[in-house]
Length: 283
Image 1 (tube, helix red, strand yellow):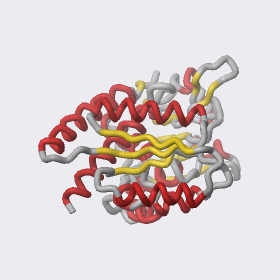
Image 2 (tube, rainbow, N blue to C red; image 1 turned 135 degrees about the horizontal axis):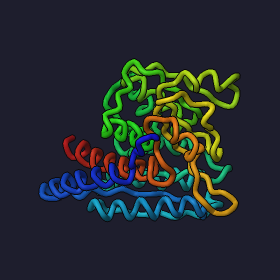
Image 3 (cartoon, rainbow, N blue to C red; image 1 turned 90 degrees about the vertical axis):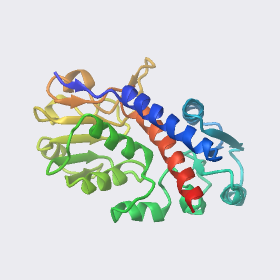
C-alpha cells in the first residue's frame, strides 16, 4: 500500500513558517499585500478566492479583492492591472482564471509587473524558470516540488511522466522536474500508446481534469503518483484524475484528492507574496 503524501500537513507547516517571515517583515514596516482580480461569477473561482483570502489572513498577509463584471472590456481589465502595478502598497497581483472568452488572458498576464507576478505566468518569469534562474514559479508545480522535497522523494535520474501540457501546470511542472535532473516525458491528448509511457515511469503526475483517468494497469509497481485533478462526480463527490483506491495498492507514494496538491497551491501563493514583498522592498 502506498504512503499518503499529506498536502494539508505540508501546507500547514509552510504557512507557519511564512507567518514568522510575515511578522519579521512587519517589524521592518513592510506589510505584505496582494490583490486578486475576479472577472464574472464563476462559482469555482469564487471558492478559490475565498480559500486564498482565508490563507492570507492566517499568514498575516493583507488582501484586496476586485470583482469585475463578466461583460467588461479588455481595456478596463488592463487599466485596473496598470493601476495596481503602480501602487506601492501592493506586492502581488493575481488574475483568477478562467476569465470570459472575449478577454485576452495572455495580454493581461503580460501587463502584470514581472516583480508582482505571484502566479508565475508572465513570459519573463516563464523564461527564467526555463533557464533555471530564480523566479516566481507557478503555484501548483511549486507546491508539488515542495511536497516531494518534504517527503525526501528525489527526482534525480528518475523517469517522470506528466500527463497534461497546460501552461498553468504541465509545462512549468516539466521545467521544475528538468531543473531537478529528471528525465521528463510529457503526454497529452495526441499521445499514442499512453500506457507504454506510464508503465516505465518512476513518477507519474496527472493534470488533465478527467475523473479516475489513471488506472492501476497503467502504473508500475512502486511508482510515485501525483494527482493534480479536481473533479466532481454526479453524486457531488470530489475525485482526482487518478483511480485512487486501485492505484494506492501498487504505488509507493500517492497524493489524495482532496488534501493533496490543492492546499499546497495556496500555500505557495502565500510564499510568492512574501517573496515579492521582500524583493520589492530590497530594491
